[in-house]
Structures are given as structure tokens and as C-alpha cells.
Length: 285
Image 1: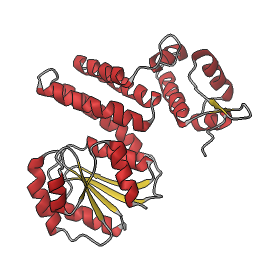
Image 2: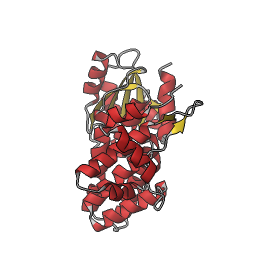
Image 3: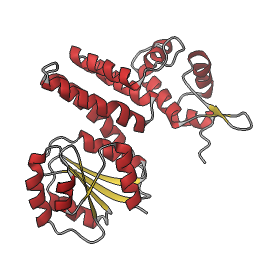
Image 4: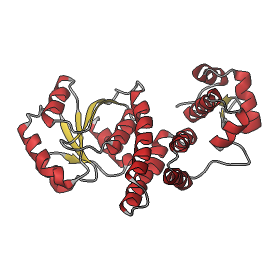
């Protein structure tokens, strides 16, 4: 059972002195510890993220009171709900305010767990951006501002070391597929669930992905496809690739279907991240 971090451990992790952390907790309610049966404070990974976020704002020149208000940690301005956070980012995108988009995304990751941020904020945000672009309410440039801000933060999370207890999973976009944010979110979620993720990204030749998976003794090869129009090319590529025994092919993305998965000899990943993670977890047993 995870009992959390004590004040010394969180200070070591963040580089912020224990006395400063106590002042922040008392004055701004930045930290939200639980207590052991003996009454000792214990802090979570979310507390670590909040302190690191605040430390970065201070390095940028904010005062602690200003930074705490931006974080939404004060009693005067409680943390926003996921829909309100999405709406705030969309408003920033409509203004073309790249700095505010980034700040609000940082706030979302600081206030929520990574899993909550991916499922309740990042996915709805990207869907809403796409719909507004279709209606002409956002330009291509506006859409790119949001996409690049999300990609930057997902890339940072993917760069973190860790995972591997469930085995190796190689993740790639189908040949010709340029939309990778959904796959990146899946990669982050799977890494946090204990997989050793090898992320290949956009427009990956299937034969190359299979060969790499074989060299790494991977258990999973995940392929993302956002358009059904790419299905025929993917079928041909999978047919021509020699898949080793023990490698399970997983198909996901908005262009995936049960029929295409069957034609590929693949398993179809559920569209929601928690269910997709659970599906792959069963394969690791």
C-alpha cells in the first residue's frame, strides 16, 4: 500500500525547503496531504506536481501569491472543473494566446492526475478544437497552437523513465498516418500502467515496426489509424510483414473498426483510454 511521501521526501524531490513547503501549505493550501493513523502528514505525486509547477512559475518571475492564484490553489479561487479548464484553453486558442494555452495545460496537469488530465481534458479539448475548426470558428493556426502545446507536454511525459514490469509495447502510427496525439496519450497512459513503451510516432512502415518489436521481444505492437481511407494500405502492409509468434497486434484510433481489426488479425482497442489500458493489461497476465 502506498503511504505517500513525508515532507523531507517531497522537499528532496522538488528542491523546495521543508520550511517553505509548510508555509505554502498553511498560507495558500497548495499541498493537500493525507494523514496516517498516527497523524503524520503524507503527500502524493499530485502534491509533487503542484510544487514543481509553482517553482517553475517563481523562476519565471511570479510572486508566490500570484502563482498560487494561477494554480487555483487558494481558497478564494478553487480548482476549476475539467470542462471549465477545456473552455479556458479554447478561449485562449480563439485569442491566439499561445502562452496562456501552455499555462492552462500546465495547470491542468498540476491540478489533476495524468490519467484524469488525458481522459477528461486533453481528449475533449482536441475533439472540441477539431469541431470548431470544421465550423470555421478556429483557424488552422489556432488548431496548431493547441496541438503543439499538447504534443509538447505529452512528449515530456514520454521522456520520463520508468515502466517495464508488464513487458515491451511498440507503438506506431499506420503508414501515411500523420495524426499522433491520440497514440501519444495512449503511450503515456500505458507507460504509467507499467509498460516499457517504445514510441515510433507518425507514418511508420509496418515491416520496420514489426522488425523492431521482434528485436526487443515486444509483447504488443500497437498501430493507430485515424482515417478509414488508410485501411487498405495498412492491410497490405500487415499482410506483407512477417509477424513473430508471441507478438499481439493492437489496432486503435478513430479510423479503426472491428472489421479492419479482424482483417489484420488484430485486437481492437476500446476508444476510451482506461478501457484500452485495461485491455492491454490483460494481455500481460
